[in-house]
Amino acid sequence: MSSKLRSLASDTLVYGVSTVAGRFLTFLLTPLYTNYLTASEIGDVTAIYAAIAFIAVVYSLGLEPAYMRFFEQDNEQRSQSAFRAAFLGVALVGTLITIVTIVTAESVSASPFLQLGKGGSRLVQIAAFIPLLDALVLIPYARLRMMRQPGQFALMRLLGIVINVALNAYFLIWLDMHIEGVLWASVITNVLVFLVFVPLVSLKAAEPVWGIIKGMLRFGLPTVPASFSSIVVMVADRTVMLMLTSSATLGLYQTNFRLALPVMMFVTVFEYAFKPFYLQHRADDDVRLLLSRILTLFTAVCGLIFLVTALFMPYAVQLPFVGGKFINPLYWKGLVIIPVVMLAYYFNGVYINLAAGLHITMRTWWLPISTGVAAIVNVVAMLVLVPQMDIMGAAWAKVIAYAASVIVLSVYARRVYPVQYDYKKLVITLLTTGVVYGLAVIPELASITGIIARVAAVPVFILVLAAVGVIRKSLITSALALLPGRRNHGTKQHVR
Image 1 (cartoon, rainbow, N blue to C red):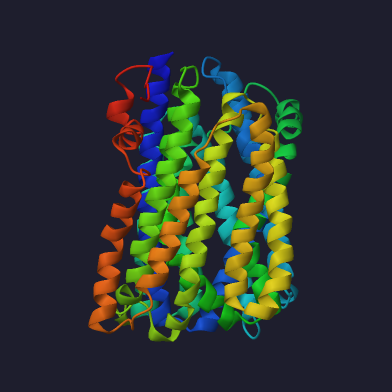
Image 2 (tube, helix red, strand yellow):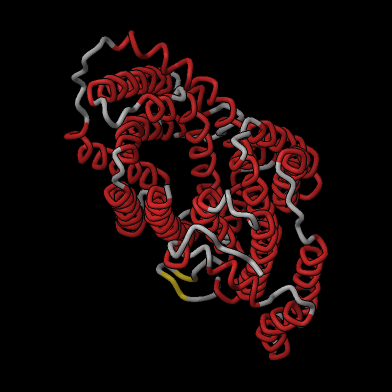
């Protein structure tokens, strides 16, 4: 059992590192866009990709998780039949929707969800191929995962991202293609990735598609609402903001939203390491105490990253970059939302911590409920706050949505798997973060006093947490236990 769990941890690490590397490379598009696209164009790109995220859920029909469920390691014929059914199902639905989208491009481009204006129909026709090509590689990617080939999976993902970033740079800097360049970069990248996957796409099967597709749809279709709710939480703010404001405002929001990347990346890395960790130690006598201390340390690390990012991002955006500054000065007025967005990501991390008990007890049906609540809250909060607070309202709506998911999940988690979290230390850490940040931003940004205050804020934060006992040796030990090398030293990880 332990060897299987260590194998899971190893695979997860590969997926985690590749995901973080990929998101960092994608982040480099942000300064590129701010220097070569207008705010309205960035808003249009954001709206298009938000629509693609929604439509991708429909394209998949839940056949990706269904294929993984029907895959049998020791039954190649059964697995091949499942692959053929899933791939053909996704390809058929995707092709039909793509054709309809291309034919109705004029109406789609003028819809309240896009509002692309003149020339928008051509953009829709180009963009229509992106979710189709994404769908065509969805099942081949799932096959790599089920065949336990995380290295090849990660390599393919990174290859696609590198090609996409390079094509974006080429089309924007040298060919000055604006939005069309961004879209064609995605289309060409997806075509190249699909061509690499072609040798894996074998449509031979031992049984008719109809014989297995019905069972796969019965399994997969119920997962679609949960997937849709997750997408609503992640990107509905873009769609609602466009409907309430303008593409230029959406471009300003999206650009600064992405600058909260450090906390998002930490939460992502934490999630990849955390799940195999608590599953490996779920039978330990002290696992609940360990989970409690990990949340405390998670909060402290988030506070540290929050301070470094929020206090020094105003300097980082002024660094030189291709085409001008790292972030075009026209977007600097939106920097105020970065601390709020990072707070939203923190609550998302708390949600991941609380979900551990449900995964341990295999009572995960409550997870889509909490996500659905968050989706509804997100949209309602956007409708209320954006007209009053503009992009800051959208950022706070995201915080409220993730906080709502935490509240809903915590109510159920305490009943099925109670963990005595150290709420006193959590509150102290959050208050310390807020107070240190508030004091550090009082002096002028460009003044010597302002620079000194921001530099001093980080060690002051650490010293205060150490003084009140939030940061202790045992907490550091708990954190180190998440590392693969430490994780393999036994099945028990006692906390003293």
